[in-house]
Image (cartoon, rainbow, N blue to C red; front, top):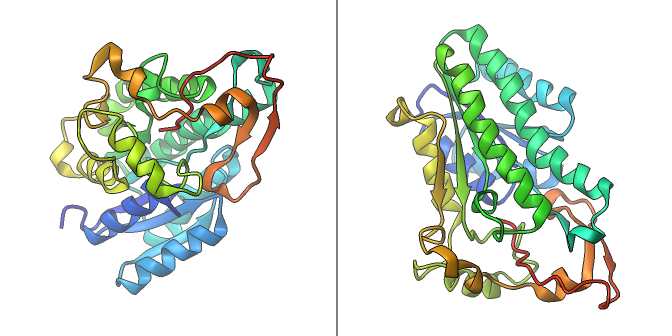
Length: 299
């Protein structure tokens, strides 16, 4: 098994990409800590893993709070004695709507979860790995939205661009300690974060949004994360690996095929909190306030 004897922490491990990664890492021999803001889904993930005979535990974690992230890493040490892999995967859709209607509060919330949460994970994960002296692997969920100007909501895209650069910069800093840092840039992946209660419609729309004639699955990202976590990726660091069915390769015409959620994007502004269990906060705009028709799919 590719991760036998390894200990992994996966944030946002209660659903979507995180849950798929929990199950895949555990199946490959890792002891896994599920860290999630949503205690209900986090505990359900542990129960599902235990039924398969995997060694998995849960800690409730708000990745935007440093004391929570530090406690998350300490939990891995207390439960399993070490920390080898940290997958900073937790995410939300965050601020949506036109730039001119976005509040500083919604900007801060989005960056707190998507960018600061990754920073804190790298910081405290690297401290543990350095003390161990045996290296490690840190993986961060970015997005193709962080690679262009039309890949997702504006604030979300900016935060994911920060994750990509942070991954590269920290890879350089941590290389002497044999700690690898990489980012994954998913394309249109069908997850609970973005199916809006209609997963089949989302899958259909996503299947038409890139050259590959099928929608992206959470297992596609979990498989890439497994590679980056394993010894097969020993010489891979500072990379932003795109997993998008050819969407980026398609070039300038790409934005024309994005799943449009114009009803929400052009008529609403506010914050979406995905699968955290917290309530979304949206306000309806006067249609005369904006003509914004940018794609709104969080990836």
